[in-house]
Image 1 (cartoon, helix red, strand yellow):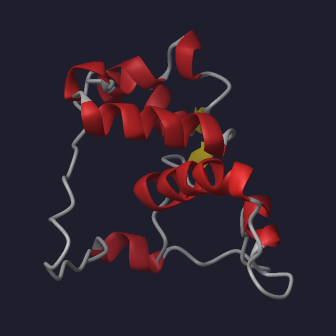
Image 2 (cartoon, one colour):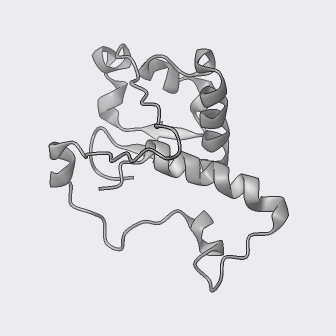
Image 3 (tube, one colour):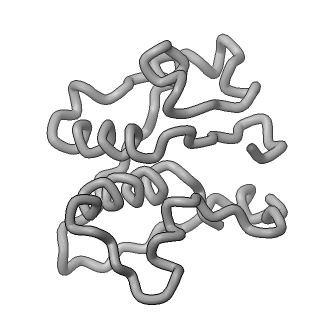
Length: 129
């Protein structure tokens, strides 16, 4: 986990990707506040830095951004403060990518959906700047 007090670490990409897919289908199932992410339901899925553990932060609502439909160009602009974070060396790539970076991407048909869920978690939650 990064040293940033507001870091988020994904512990289980597959479970988080499944949750995000579920939230996409039904927003009512999505956590509403940071405190919701600190419950036992998510304890093995995500770990939040100490900054998120503060009572004032726990009360904050989670902000969701819906991606535009296919055929629309969208660009996520990083927060300028995030640009000051020094990237880790070596850059940490989740190990589920190993399957596609060892020659040609031969993901078994039985694992395509799981791989997609993991990628959804990676792109939806991590700030990649």
